[in-house]
Picture 1 (cartoon, rainbow, N blue to C red):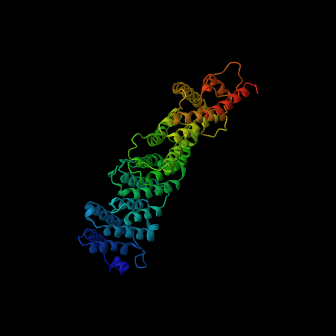
Picture 2 (picture 1 turned 120 degrees about the vertical axis):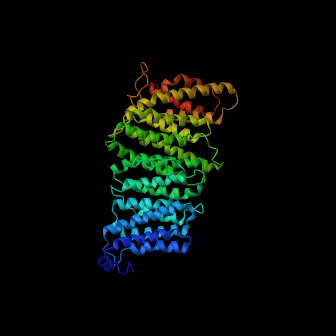
Picture 3 (picture 1 turned 135 degrees about the horizontal axis):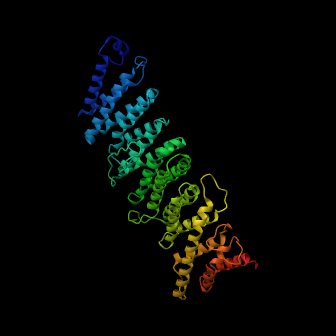
Length: 486
């Protein structure tokens, strides 16, 4: 009756608004009826009343406000009843919200959209019955994907998806936008992880649609929550969530850092965000407790090592490449790569080689054309002496091990590290302005670093390792050319 005679009733009845509110109050009370049929039927009436029709197309704002206030109370009432509410009732609410939003989205202002996000929470947090994305969760994701991403709603939309992710992975998180802290889920409950996996993808998509200024407002929170989701590798390895999160973290960082550099954000805040990024990478790559990772095939181990390498590459080729405004972070980021290089003898040779490659790359970037926020020369001047000291340590250790072993072969990991370092030394070319110390009477040639290591390299010639001898031969020829002897 309310729907069919909406226009005449509104004109004829002076108490129409009060009657409308009472109608929605009845819907709220019926939504928690013990009979699922009754509760579902009550919820469906919301769609009947709010989806625009020729009869109710001229919908006054006051009625719209009171309707959505009642819907929010209904959702909260359902949330208070928790798992005693049948999932069919919540599915009905999800269908109604999706239908009303799709058909009447032009009527939603920013406050309406924020209210809709709040209403979605009990649906998002409802425990799924299987370890798959539930129909309710799929409805939530569908609505999130259809949400507008204009300036006024964008930060709230991003924050809400991050709220959902943090709940799903059992991570406590207080967003910097509203300082609101939602209840966290159980870390051991893996039934939410498929939902979190899809939410991370949705979050990345929403983040990418923002303007540079908009992305900067949510960059810190996004990096923090997605970085936490990466850590599910060590508690729920079989879930694809951690891999999805690593890819999202890399993309968010690549988009967010240029935006951050262009913003007028304070130096203190910038350093906080950079530190958050560094902490997330360090915690993931160097996580000590790996008991949650099962024994897997060599191909899977290689895949996992390559994922670690992509994060180290992010440090070298994206973060340090645009770190002119955060000089306090330079050595911290270089230390991450050096710590990775030292994993060579910890059964993580691929990661170590990837970090060595990044460090030698940073040694070679001096003289590269500088961008607005790069500092290639400065970074190279910091890295070169650190790398040369590491090379001296490795050469010295190799010489000592070679003598101790006598005729026995050196440990495979030590040999692989030595071989890789010699190859990198041979390929490295230094800029004339980059030097840890000048060698008297020697020109500033591109291979002068070899001459600095020459005494140690000479001590390596007694080795019986066939893998090392050809590399030493090539290095000695390079030294001869540097001195003009060839």
